[in-house]
Picture (cartoon, rainbow, N blue to C red):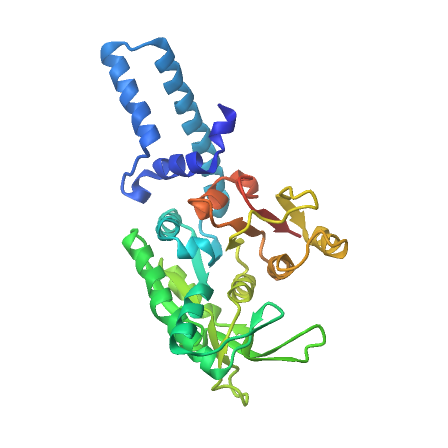
Length: 352
């Protein structure tokens, strides 16, 4: 039964059951069935085959409980930053599971910060209002009109749906934008290798109001942050509203908080080698070599760079995680045990 123990779906179900009061007593159907069979055995002495199956399920439960306890021992009271986007955000089912994961981790004593994207929602609104948008070097060229729409979408329904979802799941959350209390102050980001490409009002984060974030975390509240920032105090662009790449914002926030983990939920399995096999653990040096030999190419390059930047800023581990996996957040945080290097069931962990 060893392979069954570490299946992401079964692990998360058992994990939530182990947590008990953290999820208001929810018991997964698989475990509920095994308990029911044990009850029948006591009174009706059912067959040895069924009894053995129940014992195996009990053993799986115990093994996972030990792993969860080890993870919590190393992570209790620590800060986790999650970049939330991709299919995990657009699928109603996955969105609900994500909010449940955040609420569960909160109740276990972890300090969770959520930084979200919302590209598909922005695209839909831009089309609806008739504002054109272009891309350069993987970044959206952000005219003032584009930023107005992005801010309306990200700081409005997207942000509040996430914070509200966490509350409905039994947690505490407060939706913010990077402009609130000067949370994210930026300077203009120029694109291209020679930094000569004008991307409009795309911001590069220069300062993070960590005092505000920590005050909320100290009160048991998850900040849900929309990546819309403002110019630096006293500078000529202080009044400019900046659109910030959510991956960049999450990595910088994690680094400034010296977070224990940063997770980038994506629509990919992780970093793949040239044979299209998942590389589940990489160092920053490994990534430099893989970019050099063109194993890592295209859109994966900025993703791994965000991860390595966060690690170099002091984050202990950066996870490029497959957000299409149900309960991806809970699996990666709790299935790694004391070592804390993820479930191995999807995604790549980047360390120094």
